[in-house]
Image 1 (tube, rainbow, N blue to C red):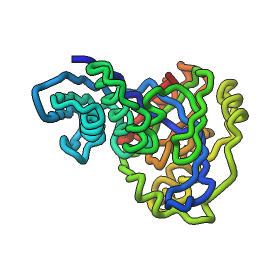
Image 2: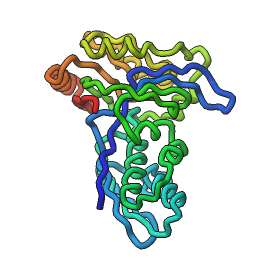
Image 3: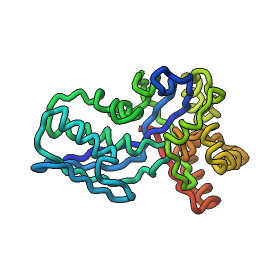
Length: 274
């Protein structure tokens, strides 16, 4: 069995520039992968795809992105054999952290390691979701289009606290709430990264916050509470996880402890970019 790390992603800013003729939205975002990760194991079997999940209640058939990634790969490679996949979940579900996409990317990488069929993984990744192409490689990248037009940037070691109140937020539901009034200009990528690197409040924004807050008003109240504590939270992706910057690892851990005590029912983690 081969093992792959499925690292969570976050958005260090997300601009929705407008709606495209194909119905999708034109995005400008800054992707980063995090130390938070799922673990994916893959081994060949005679036939069929068997998926086992621990750590979360998830479907184990075609509704699971990891399963779909395996099916796409085997079909593209013309492989008649099957695979067994074990998925150990740490990334929370429907949290704006790309857990399902990370798992799918890990399956594609692992299958190519096993079979070496020379399949175009990027093309398969595009069929699985907007975050999957980036998560094939991870790191730090500026993305445009629906997330597939990537410009990878030099890695930076940045520190954050992830704060999730325990609400599952389906991405599609937030996008359905988007209106033209929510659209905004491109991100100030260099200014965001420079501010984060020196521990200053970044000039970031997430154009999905307004529709997410309309659908889930409790998220808006929570952001206001966090800001009142002197923090600078930003919704990660479509939420419900907030990304809170910290200047160094010890500051992130101290903030994690502080928020865990203040919000005992929340999911709180100190992380770094990887």
